[in-house]
Amino acid sequence: MLAAGLTMQTMFALRLFKPADLEHVIRINKLCLPENYSSLFFMDLYERFPKTFVVAEEDGEVVGYVMCRIEKPFPGGGLFGIAKRGHVISIAVLPNCRHHGVGFALMKEAMNAMVEYDAKECVLEVRTSNTAGVGLYRKMGFGVKRTIRGYYADGEAACVMVKKLPFEPSSVT
Ligand SMILES: CC(C)(COP(=O)(O)OP(=O)(O)OC[C@H]1O[C@@H](n2cnc3c(N)ncnc32)[C@H](O)[C@@H]1OP(=O)(O)O)[C@@H](O)C(=O)NCCC(=O)NCCS
Image (cartoon, rainbow, N blue to C red; front, side, top):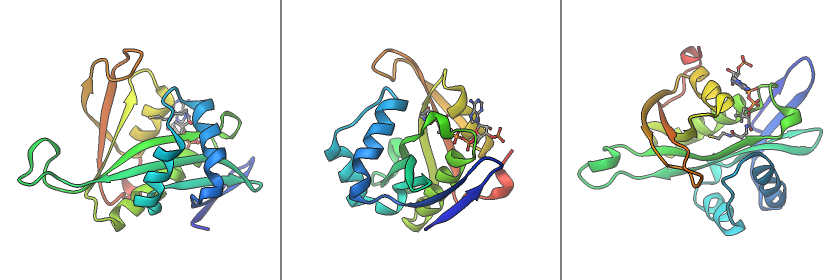
């Protein structure tokens, strides 16, 4: 077990994703987000970056996940700068398990693991209308780097949000 959290209502535990979790993670992803992926995509990220693929369990049931990629800089800097960065590809928590601190704990765990891969910053895209997502990332100290119009398949814009690593609890607002 990586970490645990306790609220008035519930207790949850974090652990690394394992292949047996795949169907649960895919179900949560489909239920919570319009951006869905193939099994191969999930497994590829697990095989390449196992430490940043974390699940949350409540009463032995997978209730949330975060899945990331570590991106290397292009030689000489360029578009993606000069340092390795962690990219949050997908995070979701089942609706009935939200507001227990699970999303925050998943993000914190993934960001700590990004440091183990030598990433210097964490980046993600979030729909401009996603109040919960933006609220979570702002609470963790992320700032908006830019907005990309028409980023999502339905035409909605994305906020690109960035936070320097390591994650310091003191940056929580
Ligand atoms: C975004 C998401 C992962 C948050 O998960 P969660 O477990 O409910 O989040 P937490 O309980 O850890 O909340 C941490 C903070 O996030 C912010 N937050 C969470 N839900 C919020 C909401 N509905 N509105 C505004 N801020 C919210 C708050 O700052 C909260 O801190 P607080 O409890 O002290 O107010 C969850 O809402 C979700 O799965 N949404 C659907 C999938 C999604 O949008 N993923 C992100 C794609 S970029």
